Length: 235
Image (cartoon, rainbow, N blue to C red; front, side):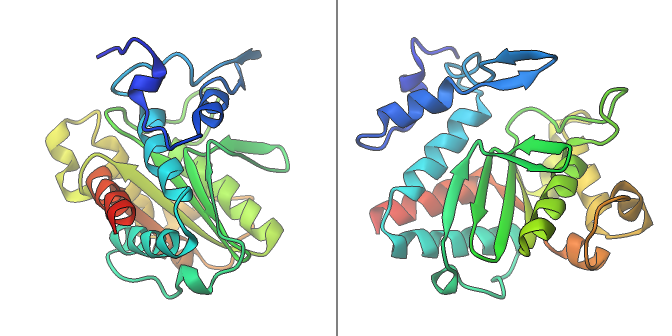
């Protein structure tokens, strides 16, 4: 479905209209051109950016106590168990949407990210599309690209790095959505093993331990995220 305007397609917290306008009209350098890459799909009901904004911008407007509880739930849902830290004990907790991260010559834009004084959490959101695969111009698929930049940025700032893939269904059910869509789950599970193949994909990146890299990879569903945000709002 295509809506008449992008405001119909986003959840807008009171007094956040200007921030949404800036988000939708943000630019990126793609194929040697500066483009408003979010504007094109801003009126589409299939927009990952619209869903990401609607969830995470509402969340970051809430009182600190509610944000911390919600972020703890997100980590628990993504990793299948409670994290070994609580956000109430973290300093300088920030939720970012559409932020660009750079380390050296490599950079990437994140759908959402969570930063604290000593944690960096990248969230890559997918809805009906699959991850971008490697090609002649880009030697790494989208998961590896995020891992490489995230690990490098975390090392630069002395932070612990986590990666979360946000998708339409639990990883064990992704095969029900067809071979093309399920490639995201296939690749994720392959990297999650923390084996030689993952090491090869991370050549040139400084990290402490491959097993920790894979352990800090989590899978989150939109349904879990929706419920967490709703609980935070109504509590």
